[in-house]
Image (cartoon, rainbow, N blue to C red; front, side, top):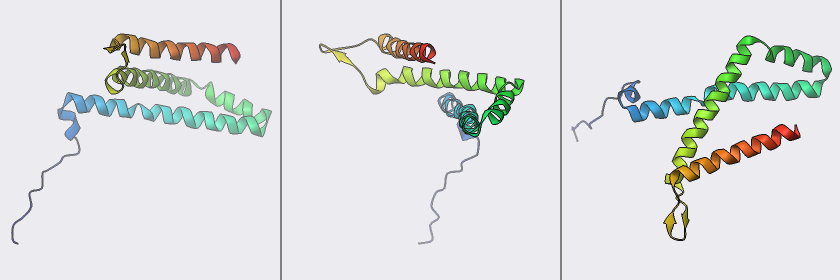
Length: 126
């Protein structure tokens, strides 16, 4: 046939027009500082295996102010990502007790309490 199919034009910044998609893109971008943090930890483990001199070099690198700022950004990004994940959880997995839905706030606070408890256990053990 001679008919041309309809092809909707899509710009590279289509997501900027809708607040929902902007928020989604920001949430997904939180992975970037976490990638840096993961790479730093991986190299740190490698340096720990190589010996004291390599470990001292890694500690020196980690004490660089730029690396400290990037690690703080990674922490904030992971907390933001966790908050958005925890706030979605009651809608994804509604919990019912005796036929009644559990309040969303209780579910979110229980997740944060679990994070705090696990962090405390790790802090005490390490």
